[in-house]
Image (cartoon, rainbow, N blue to C red; front, top):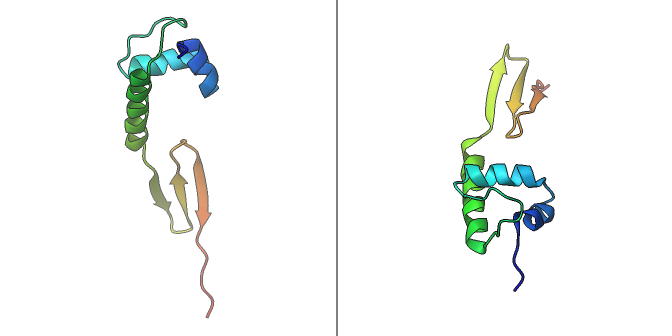
Amino acid sequence: MAQTTVKDFAKTLKISEEALLKRMSSAGLSHSSKSDEVTTAHKQILLRSLKQKQKQTSSSISSSSGVGIKVKSKGGKAKQIKKRKKIS
């Protein structure tokens, strides 16, 4: 079986090697070079860490003056949702 390096794994994930190294270090992994080997166990640790961070950033809803609702998504972008009155 071929060895997977940080460089190869970053290419597979379509992110830069530096970004992957930063995420790996925040997950507690000791990779510091693009040529370091990434095992299946390392990938699982990274995945677990990313899932935990995703759970921590949740959506929030705020209301202002009853006209509409601003919804802040996980990506940090706010969307305006307008309230409509029902005509009977």
